[in-house]
Length: 64
Image (cartoon, rainbow, N blue to C red; front, side, top):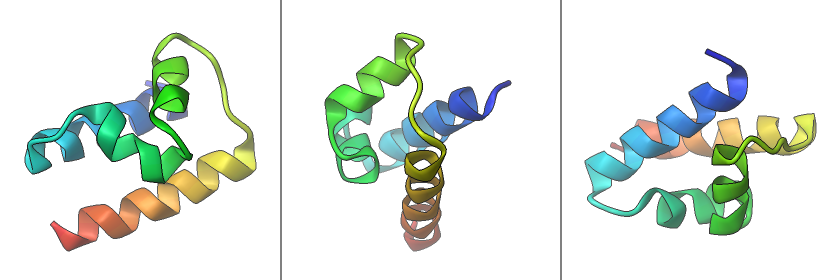
């Protein structure tokens, strides 16, 4: 599993726990739900954006 696939899986798992759509959960993490859709379609993000997203996701997962 690639880093991007892992990020997508983590966002989907958090969305399921929260009872929300993955794009809704991803919006504040990635800067928009469309970015999440692009990732699922195979596009990439910068390393800086990836690291920022992982840090934000870590915080949200810790709150659960």
